[in-house]
Image 1 (cartoon, one colour):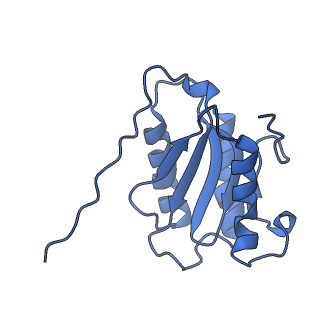
Image 2: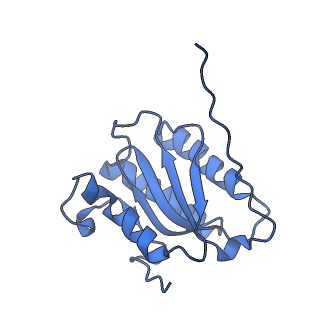
Length: 157
């Protein structure tokens, strides 16, 4: 029996979308699900340095960037740029794979939040992930989270 190949989803932004005004829900998985590669103090610090560096270079705006043991979730915006979002994410994955030895899965998942979707609810979903996985009893105790403005964003949607 042959291998089933998943259909590749397009990562292009529709031409009518203004990317620097949009927020994307992003998930990037490690290749070995279930193996902790990310939730270590030193690894988390290095990972967040790469996130902050790209924020300072105006490549992205990480409203929330949370590392779980084997994947990351983020709410991100991408300022107007010559570089497509997919390339920015892939270059970040490439850099972190080489510099921090993170073994990522080949692709990533992103979902542009539509106007009828609650940014606040998506933020809570991300922040509650360590609680749902029973890694901490309350979201505030999870140390592996980065906020672009230094604190949890207040979305007024």
